[in-house]
Image (cartoon, rainbow, N blue to C red; front, side, top):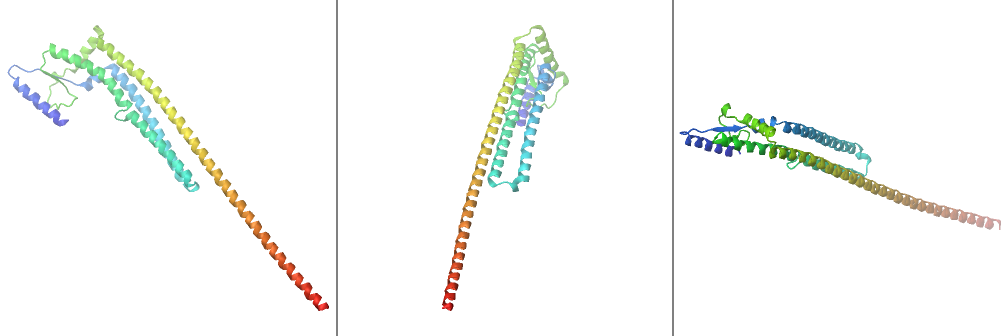
Length: 278
């Protein structure tokens, strides 16, 4: 971009030298200065910045929730089964993905902030372009360029700055003729507000749907975990019962053998006594 601006500057200088004999009129506008002095743009930008701060706080709150969940998991890890640890990790991953997607939706290259800034700037840029064409033709300028664009301004005299003239022409056009450009600007700002309201509604509905889905998924996981735990308890009880039965049977067999031996000894003792008496 710098190379492009430098080349364009060189071309302008060559053109100036070429037209030096008859004199060249050059003007420039400062788009940033113009935007700062358009009331509608200032007001809309203030509202947009307020919303951007709100979005940032929402993202920070979500990230704080995720970090707290990670800390809780680390603290409770020794008390949890592998299945429960995996479930908690999966839940954290889902929330992290949701936060990232929300951040991209708001602040990404195609996010709400970039798109809405374009909606704010475009109608004013269109109006500036119209006024530049009129002034360039009426004042017989040879060149008019934007100071805040890619052109590298090697030197400029303040007397060539026609930004205030552009602002006066914009104000005059609005006040006297109420031109179609003014209505177009107002309509675009209105469309922006309506679109913003609709987007907020859609985003709220989408967020509500994601929250409901996350809640539903959490309930399903909780039920599955409860079912697994109940099944583990059932199997544990069955194993315990089988062990008790085997133990009881073994004790009964031992008792039977012991009693049989006692009976055998008693019988042998009685036989010996009988033999002695005879």
